[in-house]
Image (cartoon, rainbow, N blue to C red; front, side, top):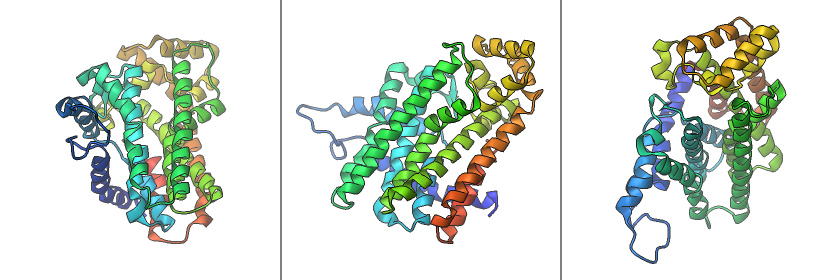
Length: 357
């Protein structure tokens, strides 16, 4: 299947995904859809301004929605009852968007998806509260599905959520500590891959594990698909970091991030780690100094990118991403019957690591 075809598959699911998200974060929160018990009068206008409006402003920025697509594709490929379980796609997607609202505050980012970061529009107080709320709002689906889905399956879904959200914050802790240069230590490739497995791989793994659990498969199958999705997440992050280096200024609007964003943040991407292991001492020290300076100067950012391009680190990073996805696909290949859903799932995994934006 070509990339054009898989883009059509992704696009065909977006309307359904958006409508499902709105079921659990209504654009107009009112007395009819408010899920919390209240003893006194509720100011819904303030709640809408403080939670619903900023969250939907943020969701309207776009985003790839690839985690709920992954959930749906795996569920379809496993022959799940889609009518019964599809609402669970909201959990990884809403939680993901909550994490990047918080991430933008931690990084003091100006842009997200080509628009002002949420905290730049609403202030840090509202943005932090929205980000935190998005860790809890989607869990309403677990409550809503009581009686329709066995209690042990719902408990399994909840346990997956708790485990993966812990992992997510471990990954963020590693990333922040490294790019701040706090420990005066450069991570190696294995440490980077584990950080990314925690940080980016975890929500993909969550989506996959939930899809398997809700499809009635055992934990052996769950772990195989979890590893597959984790590998997709890692490969996605590697490609995202490469795009930050190779995307020209003319292409920046589509990419949706400021020029040299990762260099400015001092991010230790896989390409950076490969570069640092290759450069001679003087150039290596120069690159580390630039990364730790968190500069906004284009000339200095260009110097860093030039140093990266002097090595084969970009190609090595691509090779690592491709290898991860191919190896993990081979582990789940025999778990799936031949079907259009299986073809779509394989094409989807390949698309994520070859995308241009």
